[in-house]
Amino acid sequence: MSTSTQSAASIQRLQHKRQTLEDAYSPPANFLEIDVCNPETHGVNKDRYTDYEVRMRTNLPVFRLKESSVRRRYSEFEWLRGELERDSKIVVPKLPGKALRLQLPFRGGGDGRFDDEFIEERRRGLEDFINKVAGHPLAQNEKCLHMFLQEQTVDRGYVPGKVRTT
Amino acid sequence: SFFGLVSQGAEIDIVLDGQESRKTAELKLEDGRKERLPLYYDGETVSGKVNILVKKSGTKLEHQGIKIEFVGQIDLYFDRGNRHEFVSMVRELARPGILTQGVCYGFEFVNVEKPYESYSGANVRLRCYLRVTVVKRLSDLVKEQDICVHTLAQYPDLNSSIKMEVGIEDCLHIEFEYNKSKYHLKDVIVGKIFFLLVRIKIRHMEVQIIRRELAGSGPAALNESETLAKFEIMDGAPVRGESIPIRLFLSGYDLTPSMRDVNKKFSVKYYLNLVLVDEEERRYFKQQEVTLFRRAEKRRRPIANSYIEQAIFHHRTAQFGQQQQPTTRAQQQQPQATPPLTTPEDAAAAALSPGRHGDANNSAADSPELESGSTHVSPALPAARSAPGIKDVLGEDDDDNY
Image (tube, rainbow over all chains, first blue to last red; front, side, top):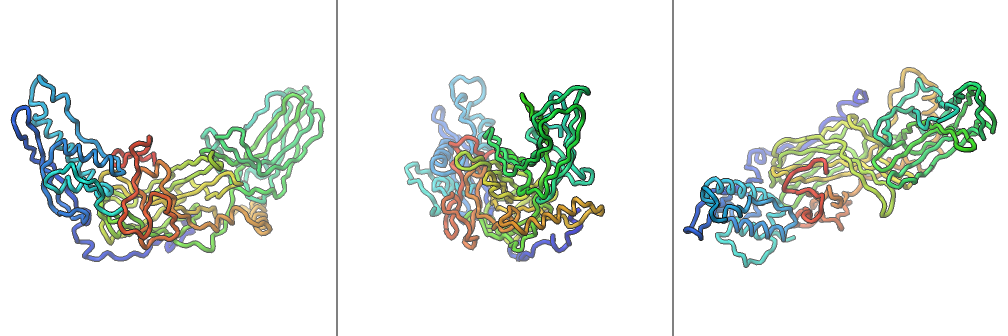
């Protein structure tokens, strides 16, 4: 009943600045898209491995390149996860499974970890992983993430550190 | 209420004067049930009658005296037996004697002081009640009757708005504004959120009302947070230059006035929590304390009840003569500096801290939050892995942990 004693003026919206047309129609400042696609299996027999294209498009200033495309394999995703767990304060999301069982010999049927279905599932999990990580403001500070996304090869002997000064 | 119903011999009943026309208020009991109690204000006289009925006619009830007490006490739940009485008045009703039939005694606690509001919380309870005791040799007969006390405060003279620029460097900068720093319980929070920089993908934004109860003091003090309201104010992704309005009606929620250091035993504080959630369920938040107070009803009831008029008269006179009433203290409170990122619930989300032009009040020096004036600083997200019970920022979102 007390709202009847409140005038319309007392609950009127606060004054605000009008948005400029430029701000309203510019592309958003948070554009970040990462695709994990084009899986390719290299090598023969026992020394085979699968890698994926990690393609990134962004307009975030923290990333040096606004477009990049690199090829990465599962162990390199694992490496990235380990680096982030150690150096950044974030709780790093999980990777898709390691598929240890599938690597045992004589597992009936299919190609094990080179099975199309398995690769597709893994591809999806890796895409979810990298999108979650790359969009994290704290992870964006880590050199390992930038190297992973934008350098052609991952140099495991790099010097860990931050991109932005802390 | 039938508190402490007597076992043998007699039935004690406390009847308050004017109960038919007196306002009532709901208060939560220790077991969670809600009870409707007669409402009294500071300085109001508490009077009535005590009826004692001897159960079996013909039996004699021998007693060592009958008295009635008016008690105001604070119970700290976690410290069993820790009861502190801040008001205690006693009236003798009868000298030692023998009761053979029903008897009725009148009582009157004139203009009795009720400095604090009744409060029933998670770890502490403040209650005011009448207690009749029939003293007997072996065990006393006791009957209690609770009342509810409300403290009223004047509308503060100084009630500045809260306006602050906060964010995470290079990722998210917003300016939030709330029209006041002190709100009465039926007030409306009018505000706005202005986006200066949006480099994350926001999915929605909400305002929450959080009550924080601090019971006890020193190392044994217990801090209990409860989210009383969640109110979505934006759905979708904003861009720079957009303003999102806030209009939150407080009368829809179960709120009490802010209580500061009541009898040095407990505090109840309220915070507005602005929460932004991004596409990956990461939460970015900014808590801001607000002061809530209870304003006297502007409208008087058409039925001119002498007790209510007396109460307002006594309340006003009570306010004049006294030095530092808790009610006036509540008015002079300034909005607090940002609480640092200390509790597990807080630590699981990113705290937005003042930007370069932000509030100088903020004592961010010791907290993981950003210092104002810094140029490139990483956001304060937690070392959440090792601590149990802390939410996974990048994983599942558990609203209730908040």
